[in-house]
Every structure is written in structure tokens, then in C-alpha cells.
Length: 320
Ligand code: FES
Image (cartoon, rainbow, N blue to C red):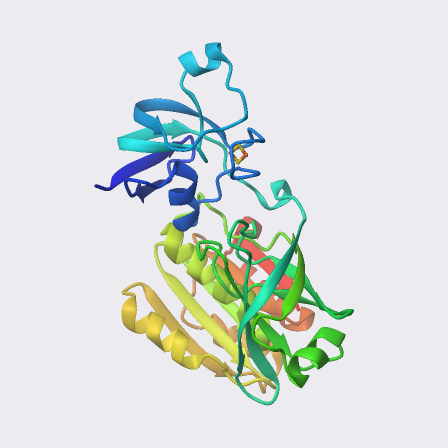
């Protein structure tokens, strides 16, 4: 039987199945609760029961003080919800996540066109990468390294998708020469603060330029799983790479009522492009914009958005 878990003070709520730990259920829903070892040792996932009932499903070495237990202390990686519960727990921000180094394995390489491939990696069974949508990682194989934005959602457990562009980075050269299934790729990260605002319920405009689509795709999936936005609009401008996952974008539009997209050619003056992107949005006072692309285009887009009453608090950019 599924239970509803509500986290205070953030107000996030998510379902939990009978044998889920509270932490497992939260991560599957994309809620970035704070945690560390995921095995009952560190105490980083300490939370407090506000109402409802929980039961211990895994033993833990971390000692909870009797006095704290009496006040409802619990470890989210060791306890499961019995019926609906409300807990008090802290949400992770981009700066709270520790650097991790993980030996991942190649699950699939999907060569999309001459210039870009989608690389799918799996973390080991006992370890998942802690990250927030919009962050990047460093990949290395046989001494060849490169830095890439994650294109998948933190809610996807052990699977990580990255878009590797044929460029000067040694890792790209190695990847385009061929990566065997199960080859070990050393992953280090995450870094970056281009992450979703968890407590916003405003409409979101996502704007991607070429493979700026990678972090934007991750952000869209995370926003969907968190149900944070009233509506979502994607504008994807393609220059050299074409719209390389157009079918995926179309499937989102088919599946969601509140998602619209427009694929645009990037061959125009930057100020003109910015005006075209925002043409359907005369007033951005109550919106958020997440944009990833070249610095010149982002500057034009920001100027056009501020002229339409966007608050600087609603502007989020990543220069690619
Ligand atoms: S995450 Fe370390 S004790 Fe729960």
C-alpha cells in the first residue's frame, strides 16, 4: 500500500511503497533530501517525525540518542513510512553536495549524428551519484578527460545520460573512436549552480542553444518529477548540431498538458533571436527563465527578458 510522505518546512510531498525507505522514495521522486552513506553509518539523513508512524526496515550503526528518539528522530535511509507521515528534514542545495568519484560503466553509446553522441553510464549497484539537475561532471577514461552536463534526472537512480560533442576535449575524441559496453569511465563531480528553484511554482521558460539542451533536458525532467512549475515552455535554438533529440521533445509535448516547445533556427542576429524567443511572452514578471548557450546570446536574451519585467531573481543562466 502506498503512503504519502510530506516534508516540512519545504512542503514537498511524494508517495512511498511498502518496503521503500523514506530516502529511496524521496530520491525516486527527485526530492533532494540531505543524506550521505545511504547505509546507516553517517547520520546525515537524520530527520524528525512530526506526525504518523514509521518503522525501522534496516539496521544502522549510527547511534540515535534516546532523548532524540523520544522526540521523533529517525534515519531516512533506515526507516519506512507506515501510512501517511509528515517529517521535518532538510533539502540539499547545490553547495551541500560533496564531490564524488565513481567508477561508472558504459551502458550504451547512441551516436546521434556526426557531431554528437548520447552516452549512457551506470553507477555501481551500491552507489548512486548525488547531483541536482543542471550540474556537470568530469569524465575520464584511459587518461582522456572532458567535462559534460548531465542530461538525465537525479530521480533516475543509477542511470546517467550525457551528450558528448565532437570537440577538442580528449574524452570526446576517445568516445567518438568507440567505447565498449561495460568500459569503466571515471566520473567526478558534480559542479555548478544552474539548478531548479524548488519552491517556485511560476511558469518556466527553458531556452537551449545547441547542446545547451543537455542541462535543460535534465532540468525539464526534474521540474516534471517535482511538479514545480505551473507551465513549461521550451525554446531550442540549433546552430551546428540540429535538434538532435527532437522526438523526445515531441513526446513530452504529447504527454503533458502544460508543456509547449518551439524548435528554432539559430541563424540570425542575436538580439533578433532573443526577441523571437520571447515574442509570445510580453510580461515575464511572474516567470522563471533557465537558459543555456553562448554568452552573447544569453546577454541579448537577458536584456530582452528584463525589458519584459522579468525579475533578476527569475533569471538563471549557464554559459556553454
Ligand atoms: S545516509 Fe548515512 S545514515 Fe542515512
